[in-house]
Image 1 (cartoon, rainbow over the protein chains, first blue to last red):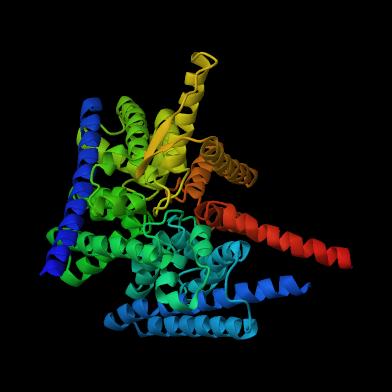
Image 2 (cartoon, rainbow over the protein chains, first blue to last red):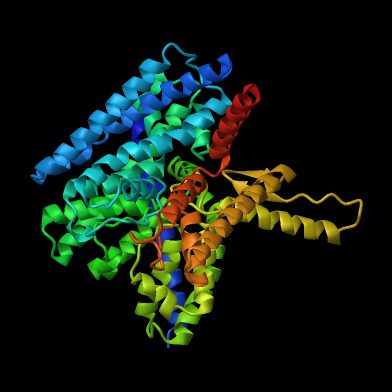
Amino acid sequence: MRITMHKIKIQMSILWGLLTEILYVVGLVVIGYLICLFFSK
Amino acid sequence: MTRTAYENIKTIGYYIGKIVIAFGLLMLIPMVTAVVSAEWNVVLYFLIGLAVAVIVGYFLIILSTPCQKKLNWSQGMIVASLTWIVTMMVGALPYWLSGNWLTFLDACFDTMSGFTTTGLTLVQDMDHLSDGINMWRLLLTYLGGQGIIVLALIILPRTMSGVFTLYIGEAKDVKLLPNVVNTAKAIWGISLAYLVIGSAALMLAGIWLGMQPFRALLHGIWIFMSAWSTGGFAPMSQSILYYHSLLYEVITIIIFIIGSFNFALHYSIWTGNRKEIYKNIESVSFLITSTILIVLATAELAKTGVYTNAAALFRKGYYQMISGHTTTGFMTIYARQFIHEWGSLAMIAIIIAMLFGASASSTAGGFKGIRIGIVVKSIIQDIKRLMAPQSAITIERFHFIRTQILEVDYARSAMLIIIAYLVLFATGTVANVLYGYPLLDSIFESASVTGNVGLSAGLTSVSMPAGLKILYIFMMWIARLEFMSVLVLFGFILKGASKTWQKN
C-alpha cells in the first residue's frame, strides 16, 4: 500500500513537472506573440 | 612506441570497439522501418552498415585484449572524442550506399551534422528519401542530442569502468543522481517521456492537416526527434515551411524550447522543485537574451516592412529567432531570405542568438546560458567592487539547482570557453571568406556551425569546396564536445608524435 502511494506520488510529481515546463514555455511563446503584435503595423 | 602509450591505445580501442557495436545495433530501428515500408534495398544498406559496425567493433576489442579495463581521465576524454569520429564513419555507410549523398565525405558531413544536432545537410533530393534513411537521419539527431556515450552507458553498463570521464568528455557535466549510469537512464527517461507526448501531438496535428495516419505518425516521430534534440533536420527540404501550419509551428516551438533546457533543470522540476524554472540562471538568462534579441529583430523586420502583420512576424521572425537561439535550425523561410530580406539589425540579432545558444548539459549548442549568466554576474560583481569602499567584500551569487557563490574560477572557466567558441567562429568566417563567399553569408554560416544551429544562408551545399566541408565537420565536432575532450585527443597525438620524432 505504502509502495503504491509512493509510486503515485512520484508519477504526480512528474506530471506536475511536465505541466510546469509546458505552461512556462507557452508563456514565453505568448510573450513572443505580444512583442510581434506590438511592432506590427 | 613506449609501453605506456601502447597500453593507453589498447584501453581506448577496447572501449571504442564496444561503443561501435552498440551503435551498430541501433541500425535495427531504421531497418524495421524499411521493412514496414517495403524498402528492401534500404534493408540491405543497413544490414551492411550493421555488419561493418560489428566487425570493426569486434576487431578493436580483439586487438585490444588484454588491457587495463579502468579508464583514467585522459583515456576517457580520448574515447569520448574519438567515438564521435569512428561512429560518424560507420553511421555514414547506409547514407553513402543509398546514393542520396554524392560522396562519402558528404555522407560523413550529414552524419556529424546529425550527431552534433546541427542540421546542415548535403543530401540530394531530400523530398524523395526512403523512410528507412529518414528514420536513420532523425534517429542520429536524437541520439546525438542525448549523447552517444550516454546511450552506451545504458546499453553496456556492466562492462564499462571509470565511465564518469566518458560522460564529462561528451560535455555533459551534471550528475542528476550519484551514479552516472542512473544519470544516463534519467536523461533517456526524460527524453522518452517527451517523445511519446510530442510525437502524439505532432501526429494529431498531421492528421488534422490531412496526412494519412501512418505518414502523420512518421512525421510526428521524426519532427519530434529533431525538435527535442534542437537538431534541425526535417524529412522535407522546405523544413517546417512544408507543413504551412501555425499549429505545427507552435507545437515545434514548445518542443524545441523544452528540449533546450538543461537535463538537471528537467530533473529538478520533475522531482518536485517546480520553482527552479523561474530561478535557474539558465532559464533567466534565456528569457532575458531571447526577449532583447526578439525585440531588436522584430522591430527591424516590422520597420523594413518584410512581414507586415503580427501573424507573419510571429511565424517568420519570432520562429526563426527562437529556432536560432535554441540552436534548433528549423526554418519557416527560404535560406536566401535571411540575406535578401532581413535587415542588418535583425541579422545581427539572429547571429548573436545562434552564438549564445541555450542551456549546458542539454541537447543545444552555443556558448550556453549558464556561461552568459556567470560572465554578466562577474561583470556586475566587478562594478560593485569598484564602487564599494576598499575594505568591503562583495559577494555575488547565482542560482543553479541551489544558490552558489560566484567564484573567480567559475568566471574564468566560462570566459575561456566563450573565447574558444569565438576563435572557432572567427576561423570559420575567415575560411568562408578565403573560399570566396561574401562576408555576411560567411559570418551567418560560421555562427550557425559554431553554435550547432543549422540555419543556413545558402552557403552550405553539395557544391561547396571539400576543404570547407572538412572544416565544418571539425567545427561541429569540437563545438558540440565543448573543446576539452578534443584538445586532450590532440595533446595525446602530439605527445606520441614528438616522442617518435625524438627517437628517430
